[in-house]
Image (cartoon, rainbow, N blue to C red; front, top):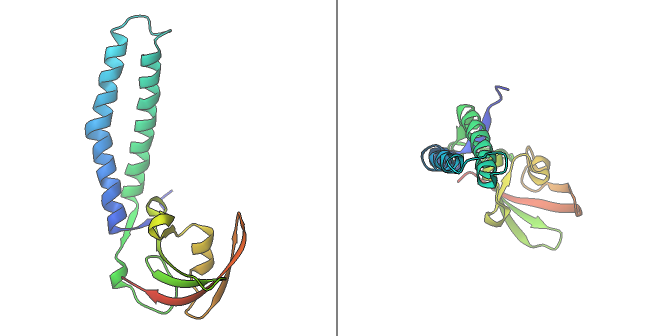
Length: 157
């Protein structure tokens, strides 16, 4: 599992900040909660203890996931890219079927946020767009049915 994980610098910083918070704030807090719950005696019927242990498991899993992604991170600066094809990091202007203009940037999995116009490179729409050029019409199969877009602009900003 040595696959590189493409992401933008902003996404990389957010993952590093989340990892730091998990290690320096949340992990110590849950350890303290476990110690406090342990002090209450019988662990077999101690809901606080079991909840804290479960939370500790989630935190440790997320820490391992973040460390793995960060160690395999391929941080991409879109301003260093160029070309006339859609690729990771590109900001696209599209026309949908109703001639409404939509703008998306193709980003890493952890960075995707459709409301902010950021779509994961693994999303159906990004997969349909990658490799295409300005002027091409693209059909995207979504859970809600097929959608069509025309690529009107590709920027690396």
